[in-house]
Image (cartoon, rainbow, N blue to C red; front, side):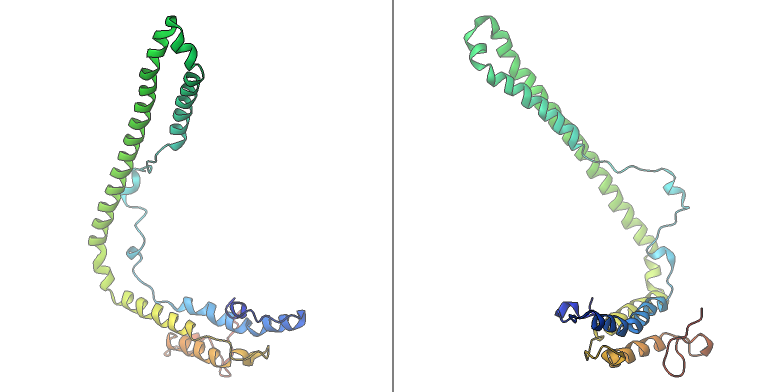
Length: 217
């Protein structure tokens, strides 16, 4: 979208001109796609845990608060309370139904207590599990933080910042709908790719002497 200039809303109106603009950014898209492939390799355990670790044999299920069950319990209490309010005059006017009138606070309190107890117990389990995950993550970080000082990781940080800066400098300098639209930006990206290519092995270079990308297959 940025190469097409959509953020500036200057996409051509006519179909053939739009097709030429799409063709003009094809080479730039290929160059930008190559950039992440040059990223230095880093220790895999920096960001990814070992899936063969015996610690993960015990599959822990993340506890949740069962709001659906709580809503069902609340609907039952609401229905019971609605029936009591609807028959208020009958229950309080008839002395024979005085026990039914006295029975409502007990049942209503039981419903409310059961809902509060279920919610608090489920929330307590969630907080315990989150606290365990936080403590375990901190332990794993302390065990593996020495890998963050690895030379490859430093190269990765520098590479990411350099790639971010390079992409910020990519811009459309003309609207001729040909290769001159990104003339300077193409040189900037090619220079980035050459910096991170292996100069001691020219056969692996990504460019021909005329500056075009090698097509190996």
